[in-house]
Length: 78
Image (spheres, rainbow, N blue to C red):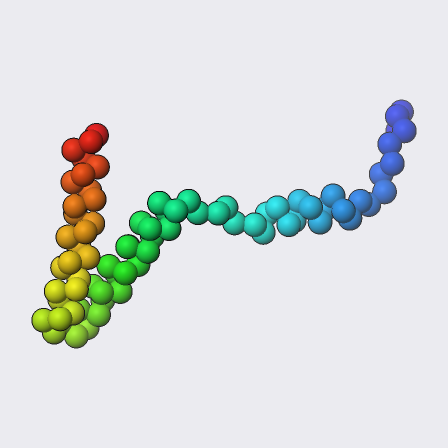
C-alpha cells in the first residue's frame, strides 16, 4: 500500500464491538411498568380463558380496567 498502516489483527477492537452488540438496552422504569402490566394481563387473560372461574375472570377484568384507565388518561392529555 502507499501508506503505512498496520494491518495486524486487533482482537481488543473486535472484542469491544462484539460485546457492544450483545448488550441489550436498559429499560426505563416506565417501560418496565408497562411491560409488567401487559404480561400480568396476558397471563390473567389466558388463565381466565383456560379456567373461567369468577375469581380468574374478575382478576383479568381488573387488569384490563387498569390498562383502559391509563389509555383514557393518555388520550385526555393528548
